[in-house]
Length: 416
Ligand code: NAD
Ligand code: 13P
Image (cartoon, rainbow, N blue to C red; front, top):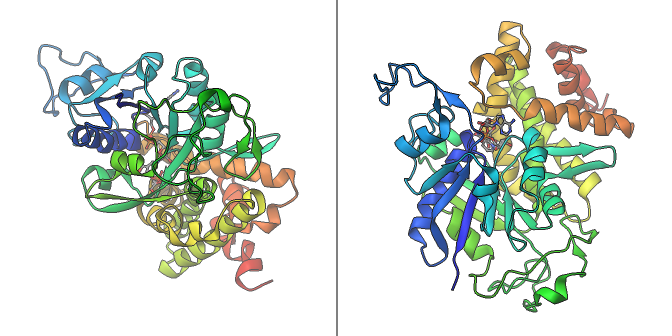
């Protein structure tokens, strides 16, 4: 019997944390997974300074490759400093080598880089691989808005689910308890132990040849022509049990659901709200103001989901899962988008400037998501229907001021 080989595409703050979780689990579930986990690293040079415990006097200040530092010291000194990574994580600078023969691909990088990464791996992955997107963002094109899980799936002809939750990486890397939500709802084709989550019917066990031209419903309930290839029978089924085994830890509790669109949207849209929470906090308004932002933000998230992904998205995903309201709260309390927006207002500089100055290469997702969602709403004449999302866009662009927020959202707060 075969085992699943796992690759993480991305090695930032969250990418490295997820790699740690997954590598701990592959070691524990050797019946399901190959122990070694590939982690693709966007290669860069790092300097190990005199204050680091890894300082090597003979190398001095000579820059070293991040991949060799990770493989040698088992620490991502740039994006997850201070956390020891399991030694079965193999940092790999070659995307094509990293994805070779992997049946599970975990996409975990800032959303602005995913298009280029998918282009490079296309044609180099196993046709029956399955993906999980940990990316928080949406993809806006002239045709509309799509989710990265959809975009990855369509682009690579694979099925891709989504993982999202109230998951500030540094806390999870330090093994402080948190929950997460994984949405995984493939068409009933894999030889699955679980009944198909979509209709509860037993899995029909379709063969590869049957599948070549079979259309199926995508995560929005639309007929999708992506040609999925069934997982060969010698592999353990890639079902909810398998993904729980891959991601669940005593400090990282996994809830499996089937609403891929809701889980993906929750993670993307809360970043816009977290910026607004940072703006009002930075202005010195109190917890009441922040709670108002979260309430209005949650309403706009649900409305957006219902309006544009209405076929499948469930309001409860926003109001009851870690990927919804819980992520909104944690991100609006201590996430990077919140912290950078707060500092920007306090220091009278732009959020981009704070990101450059403070994040040491980590990337905010909220600013680009705010612009992308705004361009999508504007093209449809819907800016006024989403006053908070619109206000965040306008404040980022310097067209409005934080003090205007109460008036800008008055249609929601007092029906003005
Ligand atoms: P990060 O903010 O640490 O981003 C830096 C990463 O981007 C580094 O790995 C860097 O090498 C890479 N990078 C830089 N330029 C690149 C390029 N041109 N091409 C490809 N990669 C490049 O990343 P992260 O925190 O791991 O975030 C990944 C995703 O996870 C995001 O969508 C984020 O919203 C989400 N997320 C983050 C957290 C968190 O707490 N950090 C928690 C949950 C979800
Ligand atoms: P930030 O990217 O704002 O840090 O949010 C992290 C996150 O998604 C927590 O769940």
